[in-house]
Every structure is written in structure tokens, then in C-alpha cells.
Image 1: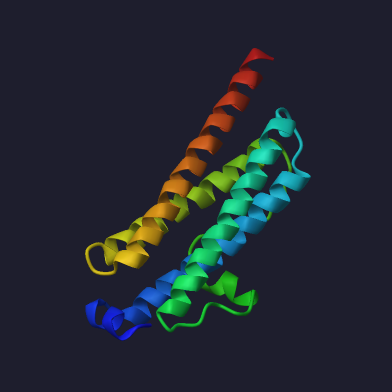
Image 2: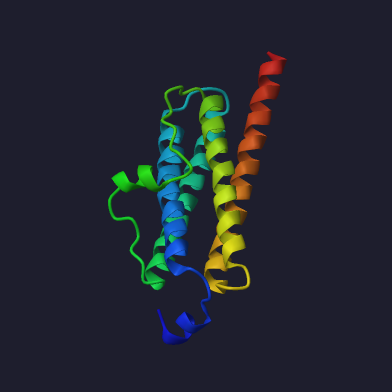
Length: 165
């Protein structure tokens, strides 16, 4: 990190790196949860929902890239062992044991709501202090809110389909 950047950064950097690594672990797990769920799910609207879940997976991977890059800029080390994802993530991975599309969507919804809390926390910690990390957190937060809205919309559609049957 540059000398001037260090001077203006007035927060506990090791704590921030820890939070960013937690978010990084969660993004990797969210990526896989979206990706595998899209591949194995069954039920109504599958052909419409699968591409959206794969798009969400790509966005989670992009979030992981942003986080890893910022951790490195802060002179930290991103988690390097995938086994660490499970111990560092506050938002847990739920294996899709029920492959009904509604179950997959609900699992992803739980993850998105946890992610919204994580990025709100990071945004609050960095607001007015670390503009770069704050910008990253709010950008990702916007995506996670959009994901939540997409999932709620699909779940609402599924509920309406069930009611009509």
C-alpha cells in the first residue's frame, strides 16, 4: 500500500482484513452454491431461473476478485486454502440436498440476506475512513440486494404457480 494511503487510513487494518477475508470466503461459497444449485435443480421455471442463478454465480466470483485485490492492497493475504472458507465464513454454505427449485432459491435467499448484513457492516466500518473499501462494499451490497430481490420474485412466482394448480 502506498505511503499516503497508509497515512489517511485511520482504522484497524488487521480487523478490516479479517472482515474482508470472511466476505471472501462467503463469496466463494456463494459462487458454488449458485453454480451447483443451477445445475442440479428441478421444478417449474427451471429454464428461466437457471441462467439467472448462473449470472449470480458469476457476480459472486467477481466480488471475490474485488475482495482479494483489496486485501492485497491492504498488505494482507487472501485466504489461500479452500478449507479455510468454511471456518472463516459467517454466512454458511448449505449443500443442496433438496433439489426442488424452491428449496434451492430459499437457500440462496438465506445466503444473500447474510451477505447484505456483511457488506453493510463493512460499509459502516469504512464510511468516511477508507473510501476505496467503502466503495467496494457498497458496490457489492447493491448487487446482493438485487440478488435478494430476484430470488424473492422467483419464489413469489413459484408460490403463485402452486396456488393455481
